[in-house]
Length: 273
Ligand SMILES: O=C(O)CCCC[C@@H]1SC[C@@H]2NC(=O)N[C@@H]21
Image 1 (tube, rainbow, N blue to C red):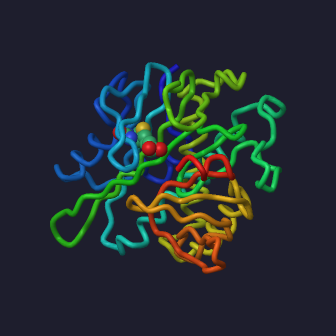
Image 2 (cartoon, protein in one colour):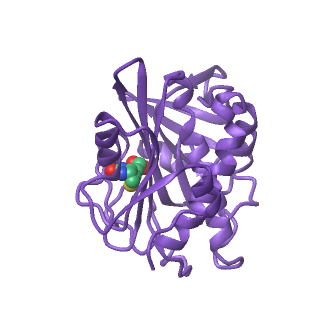
Image 3 (cartoon, rainbow, N blue to C red):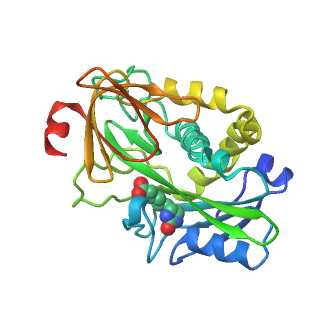
């Protein structure tokens, strides 16, 4: 089966560039922007040779997984564009709900979660299934001429395989018993992106995105440890604020707001951080 865009995405002017293998779909999308591409372009592949993860880490995309990057070129506010990761997380969770048959995957097992979602969102942008990382999202940007910038919204999903040497639990759709392929998932994702981007409405709908995100949040109200630039903040995950920053009440009762960091759930995890 070939990669295809959902009719809703095609009719709104999105384009698709599909590859069998690439270095990184994010790198390719940003190269297109620097060469003058105007955005609304999905770059997809079932394999990456040098996939990029958050915080300078690598991201493995063996044959059969999904690497998808949406290129957006804008003259708006870069601060708002940073919230597109939350739009992407919701779009991916909606797409997974649409293509993975009910009953295949248990409701979130994270004790602190609200326990009603098969696919949960872990701040800032991971998608979890059965408490393990199924997908990651990486936003990268580049400044362009004429006060414009490009954002690459990169989405990586473990469809058929996941790395086993990670310091946190990971999984794949196949390991969870869901036989969905990358092409089917992408079709649903390109549709779900449109729905959520419409809600986001160039940032005007961020409050609605935040509400939807919190309804799928993993670990809300539970014990967490957040690593921020080498420091660790421990406490209770209270909420995300209006700019989608992580809000934690630390062990001394002080509310701390965090813009970027790595979250670990639970007492055991926090002892290891
Ligand atoms: O570290 C993370 O959790 C984020 C992983 C993001 C991986 C995706 S795969 C598609 C896009 N291209 C890349 O090189 N990275 C992102």
